[in-house]
Image (cartoon, rainbow, N blue to C red; front, side, top):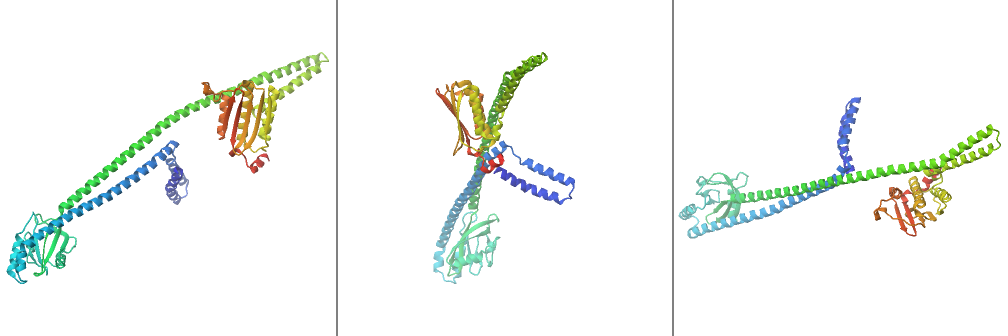
Length: 508
């Protein structure tokens, strides 16, 4: 996924650069610039294995924390808005009930005068206006009266309204005031909200009025109250909620930062530890390679010295003896030549044997089965240990890596049997099953310890080489050992079996 993302980003940034450069004159300098920028873009997104691993660990965490933060923030804001809206509605409802009580008190105060007066009783109307003008409360509270034609007749705190017709009056937001108040009074009473200047300061503020109608006199009587305290309370609650949301987001970001740092530090520690372990294993592997090389060189050197060298010395002595006898016309010169020729033939056979041990040609030409057959026959002739070999016809179906690995395992196992087991007979079988090719080597020797470290001693180089060869192929190596003998089972998976057409191409 990281490689796909990197390719997309590279294409996204590289294509505009290529387009701009291709639009320029086709000169050597433009091509050099294009190559330079492409190299810079590739280098910018060429991540190491550790960086890819860190991104794989941290990017999902950062994305998850970001999504959680967004969800928590959105849900918190929605919940807060619902609570604030409920608080605002509750406070405004309390204000409305307060206004209703104020107007009820005013109607109670003038009900006797209004109830006994006729519709055109000017004295009664004057008495009512005087009584309402005297009823003040709070800093900005008062009662107002508008005639249905829009003329104001009572406004004790804003006397400039009295005696004027205010039909069509609107607030700074375009909300109708006088016409709406008169409409509400005509329909039986109700509430209205608009912007209105405060009598105490002259500054505009949001006001709620409750209006009722005196229908006999065609009056709209009401009172109003400013809800600045409600607006301030709501604003304070909203600011407090916002502050808490921001604080929660900071906590989440802080926890995510600590988690990312923890992942980074843990990855760094693991990386350092794994590198040290890898360095240790690499040093051990390098040392084992050196040991194996020295052991192989020593074996070849011993075989050359003890076998071929001795034979060639014998050939030299036979030829020198023949030369002297020929010089003396000795009849035995032919015998010396025959002995030298026989010794030279033995040396040639020894060279062939060493060459076969290093890399048998039959393994590449005929396959694993014939190569193992030749190995077991030579092993029996050389050591006197009887080897019973059984195989199926693979028809060279194993690939080269599998053939070499199984051959070397058989070679190493037979060498260990010769040196350490004291066995008198060995059985070798090479067969196939549903899981792949299986090489089975069993002897009747004294047994061994597997793995070697089970009893506190180091595992042999030969056994480690056998195990590593099988593991390189993705197979398995099992060693079953008792006091009656040892069985080694090496299995190579089906992935190393060639298809029939591939086999024909290799043997053609």
